[in-house]
Length: 99
Image (cartoon, one colour):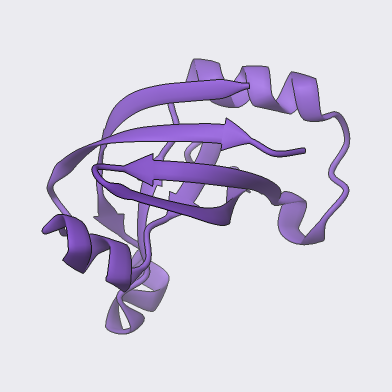
């Protein structure tokens, strides 16, 4: 499954000092991913994905966020710097589910 969407980057308020930055997947895509992936198999319910933002592609995991009712994707500092994006910016994100 491949999902492409635009989303605003946001900082996780619980760890703001650590600069944990995420994007939220669209709710409809999150529901479809939940249906396809079945019961959680990995820690925290994470799922392995390959992500592309701009010219950067990397492997990581998405995590269910009960508060937002969707999956969230961490966007590491190296990617944010390479793509000149930060919290508050909107990025086009392509996610391919690897599991």
